[in-house]
Image: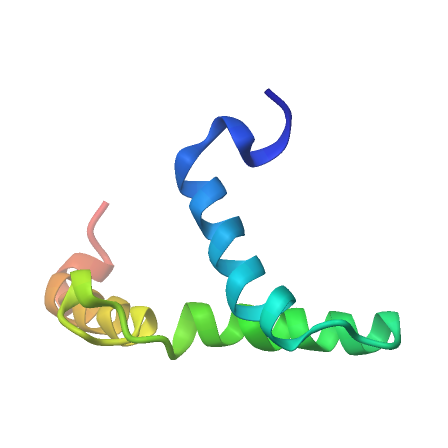
Length: 79
């Protein structure tokens, strides 16, 4: 299969993208408007959306918390 159709996670993300952005906010009049809308959605999806499987917090906040707990000054210089 071509594209993301062979990958269930990517296919689910495509469905979310279409439902939340394309069908809800489109159509756009120019390519520039479309590109800006896509950029804004990706930024929101990666940084601000609340995700229930990680404790009802945004992914970026969870990632920062994770690294703050796992990276210590001693582990930074270790090889």
